Image (cartoon, rainbow, N blue to C red):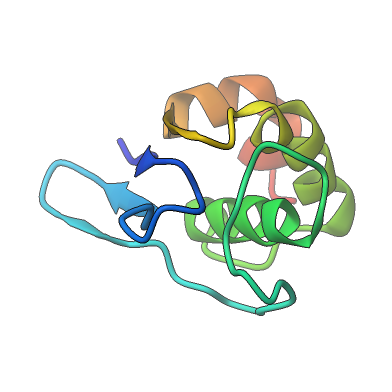
Amino acid sequence: MKIYHANCGFRDERSLVLVTDENSSKPLEHHEQHSPDGHSWGYEGSGPSELAKDILWDLLEKKPSNDLYQTFKRDFVALWPQDEGWMITEDQIRQSFHEEVNDGA
C-alpha cells in the first residue's frame, strides 16, 4: 500500500512530497507543472491542483480526469493545513473515490 505524505508546511524547503510503500520512499513525480511554486496544499489554487493530479496519476498509473483530481483537491488537498505536514494512504483515496479510482478514471 502506498502512503503519500509531507512532513512540513509547503513553504518549508523540507516539504518534499513523498510516496512510500513497503519497499521504498521516493519524491512524488511532477507530471505537468502549472504552478510556479510546485506542489502545495491548504487552498484551492494551481499548486494544490498539481499535487492532487500527481498523487492520483501515481496511484492510477495514468493521467486522472480533470473532474477526479479537482474533486480530490477540493475534498482533501485544499483542507490540509498549509503550515503542517499531512499523510494520506492509497486505501483512504480508494475508499473515498471507489468507482472513479477502482474502475479507471
